[in-house]
Length: 445
Length: 156
Image (cartoon, rainbow over all chains, first blue to last red; front, side, top):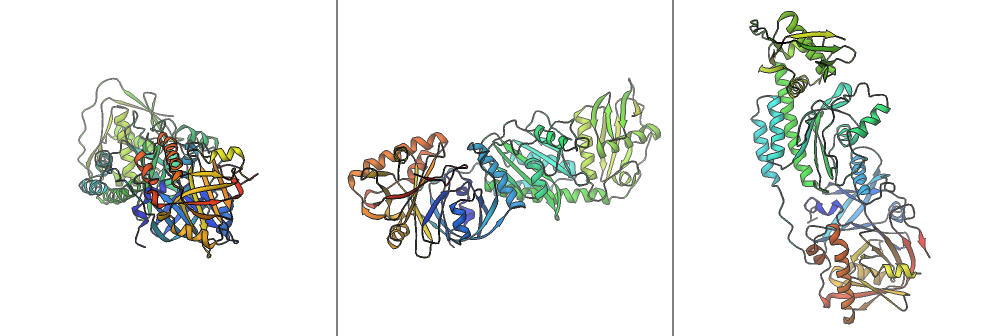
């Protein structure tokens, strides 16, 4: 095969719909339009199976298959010869195509009509370019190789997890030209993702949560595969609708609902990319844009490669924080803060913490904060270690892969964002200190 | 077979594609540059570029003229498939050039408002007059292929 499919993937986006030609057992041809063609690799594509129509009948009767695809960028036309292999009705490929189809259906007013019944997987036997004039494609907005090279270098120079996360989001903006992004961490024990950083929104949404499996971000996490949608669709929205659904399922009590998720109200394009390391899901990068079809296959590839670098670096920093010896720092008595006391209230049922009656955080991060503040008030303790927190019976960490360092970053950011008058500051690998601006008054329940 | 509504429809700014299969059932297809009705609407003539349709034309010859022909209007998704079993290849008549030019103009008006680049559309439909050929057939079956529950329903 001289033409590689990965060099003409813009034809698969459906801007100019593809055609599929098949033939029945009697030699009668059939032509139909395609909703979507999904790139798998240079030898395989998948087509959406939505209706049991003549095309479907012919394929099941072992018809050879021809596709005609057209580039909306150059006008080049291609004929592909395919052989049907199998139909997938669940799993990563199916979910990718189902999400994409939901966007296409919504865009074409077919939301009630298009439903993915299966992903038909084909082997590509040949690709031929149809003779004819073409126009030069517009230059790409970003050179992704340069962006990746620069971003990889910047990630490698980060000394700790917090710096890494900041740099990652800086890179997405400066190197990749992405204006709206969220980074969510995986809370494996609770089947949740929590927002740890974001860019491009009026409210950061740090601490907000999404259940694994819900919406584009949750499905990306569950299937550990990038999900890309080119048109606005309510079916794969997130935020209010998804949370309403979760609350209806009776899980609402454990889902962080007081902190709103950030997000564009009307995103035309959405892309969720899993962050993994050593077959372990660490989190999800979520990017969006108001324009339709803003993210293509190349964007997806570049961000998957970026997320792979980020995942390895996150894994490294989380491990490094755990390896440090628990060296107790010299704890001199800090100067007693002055002013009216800060009322900190803790509810043990869900470890929620309120400061002067304003909600701050709950769950593991809430339990950590309450433990730190209790030690501070009772023992004037200001120096803490990750290792110490890990063995502290008052904090019920969910065991392995608890993302303790990420939870500390979450807590630190939430405190700073709320201007709570309580500060966590890293003092070395696996070590941090607590300072307060005002005297504390701790109240349980 | 082709009612007046569908006959009028295929003469608008639709996308046109024609397919036929070889003896091993392998199809080939090409984009049409417009069409016209002849014999009081009993036959359809599709204009093709020979250079883009070598396999298709060979398949039409070898299959005894079995063709599938799709017409779709991008702005509405309205789609019609016609089938024929007596297609024949005839020389292109120069007096049909205005039909092609009219069709290209209509198609540009149809898809540019949807966000397509006019230069790209014109490249896709560019032709040399001496490269043109006509395929004429009598529709023997018609199907609505507009997406939805009625897709694939035979018409007439």
